[in-house]
Image 1 (cartoon, one colour):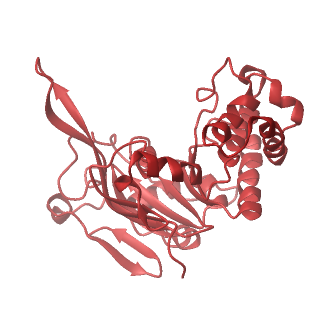
Image 2 (image 1 turned 120 degrees about the horizontal axis):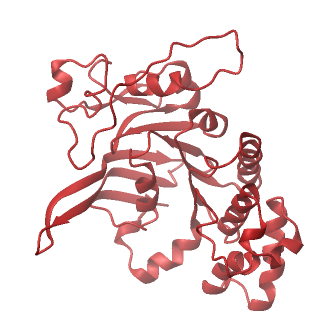
Length: 321
């Protein structure tokens, strides 16, 4: 097996809670709490979980949009958080982010062609006169036309805006793309088009994806391996086929039970979790999932489960396994 493109080792990201007249730190929001995983070149790794589980914070910390609290993030064997500002700027084009809402990430007063091409100019990758040809080429590869270059963001539909967001990430020829809920705001038919676009770009460009989503049915179609997060911790990782065939963690089973089945005659027992996800500022002791787990024991309330290897590329953090 080749060296991983991305290695995340015991990563933690805590946000301080400040209060009082002196604005003192009185606690921390443990958004990401000691997780580890790796992504191979050309692979699509899916990160799933409920809202508030820390998925987006993982992606932004990998890109160093957030500074880590502890642990390490390696990209091509280099610890991203140990780089100087100049060194980080040099590898920025190799790591790109696609946002959930592309409209909010686009300046409404800037034409989309200029918005896509400004990074090329900023990093000195092309001269000003060469940018339009490059941008039109990327627009065409994303299913848009050359005349879209001079239009403004409000003139596009939601699916077209997401294509613009993808084009803006691709224009720098990155090796890694972190896609943060890129299809959750789109209609189902448009979702399928965007997923096919992701797959096509990966095949033609050899891209590596970290695909963040709460929708397992979308992840099933695009990802080769999947990690399941809950309250800042990794509950289970496995290959896509193994996870859907043999889920081991009760939380993973509950998520999978909510995935719609396209054949009406087939039925799946629905697992409804009680209560809400606890606050990451005051997570439960022991296993973080024990407050909602129907199988929790006294051990689950007291001891943090080890993230153990239970099969080929299959890891789980559960006392019951």
